[in-house]
Length: 289
Image (cartoon, rainbow, N blue to C red; front, side, top):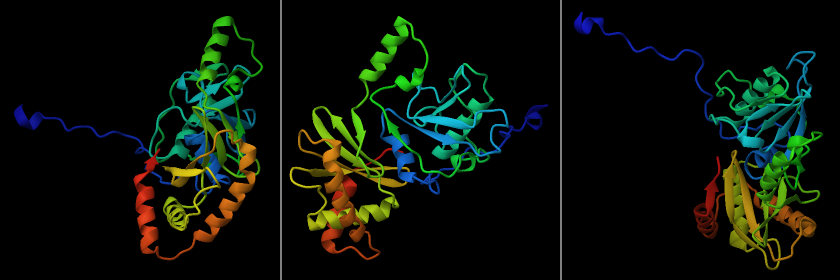
């Protein structure tokens, strides 16, 4: 039959993969904390309530959102029926919010006692987190380790040793009291501060450049602004702090810095000095996702 008999290549059926979204958590209260959960916190949780029409009348009404689950599972339906999903596990489409939506729906459909080693890749029709949970700011709990994985369960010796090994990998981290999405952490023996700013990353970079150019980007004597991460469409500046600095020591310096930052976050062209400062900041920025 020759060339005439060649079959056409079949096209994949179904909706296309989820498109890239620069700010996947935009519109959710506490957007900065959602970015922190997805990108910079090692061991943290928040409990969210599902909307009334999600999961059925007899299903779980809330989800424990975790940074990480055992074996990098994206989700888990515990034996008691509780649903856990991980912000830093599972497949990654272009939309982290839809990735979490896919994990929540898969866990709700799973039988109790089922760890989900993978969940369907999010598509354009997967509901984002914004459509699944009540619009409430997350209350983030930062943990010393991953004991929340096995809350209320008895562990054998091997499981206890495995959990202990996982706990040993956790970077010591604490929230700065009274300051949204601000987290002290200890890297080696040197304390650092990471703050997820709530403004668009480009606007935040301009404000930070103004502070840098004016010599007011630090948090006080002995502190140094190292640069910034870009994640979830937001900017996360990072400071190195003097040895011995605790999270509680940062309350007043950070509040004063936020006032300077707010004053610098204006819609105006940068000066030549500020443009040079911005170029230096961009050279030290790292994009996480």
